[in-house]
Image (cartoon, rainbow, N blue to C red):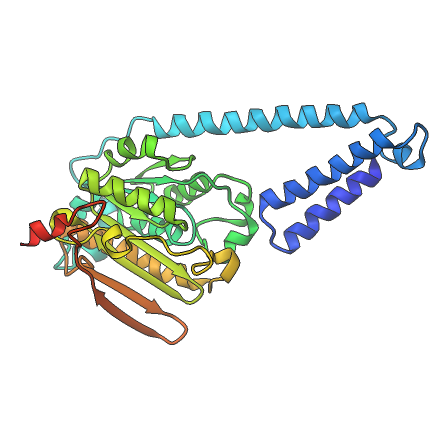
Length: 351
């Protein structure tokens, strides 16, 4: 037993040093225990290896059963907690700002483009961020700091050691914690005047409509095309403005997709998902740590501009930032009549 425990600890430690995902580390431990059980089943009684690993296969079977019970209970508890938080009654927003809030948002209020009415619009607004990873982390931080009244965040992942190089909203002590709860903790600690609604679950077509209907603006910071297209379809159907961004290695892009106000939707610009080999994930291709902070902060800026009506946003324009060569360029994008999602709705509005 001691030998197996030492091997398990060594595997876990090596996985942490290599930055292996939590699931990969648990898989290695499962393989180790599986090998031990197999040895007990095929080796004869009294064999030194069997004696060194407990002597009885029933001990390991009991260990697996108890481990499964504990894991199931922990998962059930997390789901109940997430549902309780997400179904909690939103806090009542006071009619006027307190002295503390006025002081906190003073730099916004003195801006001609924002002022008191703009800050009140932020407080009255609700924003849903899909994904609490590299892009979602800085967007969530700045939306909370800016005083957006209600911020929802949906993600089914847990905080991993490899995330901390760029997902700066999460702390080292929160490794293993659901990302939405880690992010909610940071936002509430930064600004107790905002309401945070965490949803620890994967966004699916079954829940997307009801969830999106509760929010004014949708931010997409996900890293897979299936979810991006789902987010776009739902936002178009509910006529919600969508701020979507993506990044890889040294380059990021961002745009505001709002066909109701004359822009293309995401599918107008990217009608077909590229081959997975052409667009590797950050885990496969790498990403420079501060890049998500730059693009995620742009997402927050575009959200604030959209809510307050300040300036000229990225509707109808795709901004591309190349961090390696310090270059930024903007490409005009237009609705497509043959778009399978919005059917060129933006053309009818602008025309």
